[in-house]
Amino acid sequence: MIMSKKRDFLPFEEAREVVRELNITSVRDWEKLSTDIKHSLGVPACPALYYKDKGWTDWEDFLRGEPRHKTYEEARALARTLGIKSSYEWFGRKHHLHKGIGIPFSPQLTYKDKGWAGWSDFLGVIPYKSFEEARALARLLGIKSSYEWVRTKPHLRKYIGLPPGPHNYYKKRGWISWDDFLGRDKKA
Image (cartoon, rainbow, N blue to C red; front, side, top):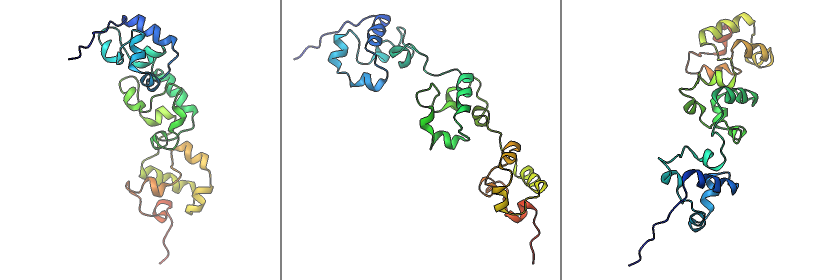
């Protein structure tokens, strides 16, 4: 029968200092170290569990002494500089832009009770008008075709809250046709 020897680990603050001196910057790098190396340093292999009620807050604090994420105001200001215009873009094509700058991947969860006011506010995007408002504005602009819609006044449309592709955006929100949207009379 093999008896396991109980290990004595450093107090939390000392273990944190030892780990910080190693310049390990991610949980993945920590996990690459063998358990024997961790134990030889006096640090448990699973510090989050071992130090749970002994000073542990999170991995960022343990490894680098930096807050995990920026405050909501700081993250929002940074997010607005990235040029991302929707949550779809945030989670999809451009998600790499916010990695490593202290903005969480799911800000709507992280900042839920810390100032979150929706994606439009976070990204600095003017929300799109309702279908009825958009149709009324489109008719006021006097645009007569989908081609003209794309080519005419894109900055004005953005500023007043009209989507670049209303036929897609309003598809399940009241869209009937370009004729209806632009107020064109159908010729019989």
